[in-house]
Image (cartoon, rainbow, N blue to C red; front, top):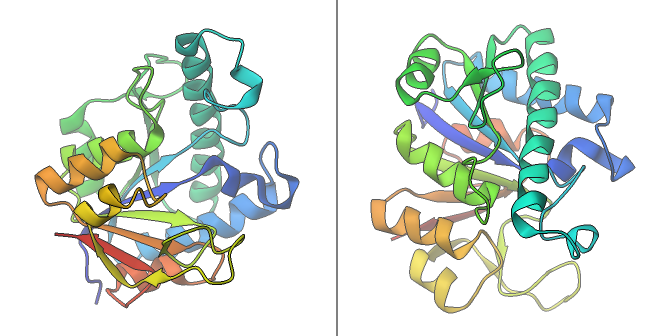
Length: 236
């Protein structure tokens, strides 16, 4: 029996690139889609936000000499590419999926309308929210939190490449300390590199818990949705 009825799953764009580090790795996308579809088939309603870092990131070195607004808009369009790739892979797994984009492109995807998104979820469709919030200077972390609140998700699940929240990068520091549970305030005061401060503050102000877990461990999405102790829980 699933612990959560409705979750907002946040994925980085780099996840879709797999070992290629750029673009979309078809094998990686299909394996990820299989895990997400398996959870959806248990009856869990899934909203999904994916970043665009495998194609373009507005704050990356490649964008340093660009106008920030233009760079961020390019990043938003990269999330649409990733969303369409995920939609195709999910539907090949038998999971009905809708892409809803914050930037109007009716020939490609539905416009984001909150009530319609909730209706899709209630009908058992996975909803992928693309193009961030449509506003520059906001990351896909903030977009994920916003959409999670709008659709009344019970938790925001951020999939990463490490086991959860540490006091410093465990890939660089062998003495990094792992947090099984941590408060919103600790994340902000200690500047723990989890999500943007605006996203953490939004969750804190609205009582929306966050779980940060390792996507590289097969089955973790299912374990998380079933309420098992996976990764780090961020709450009040």
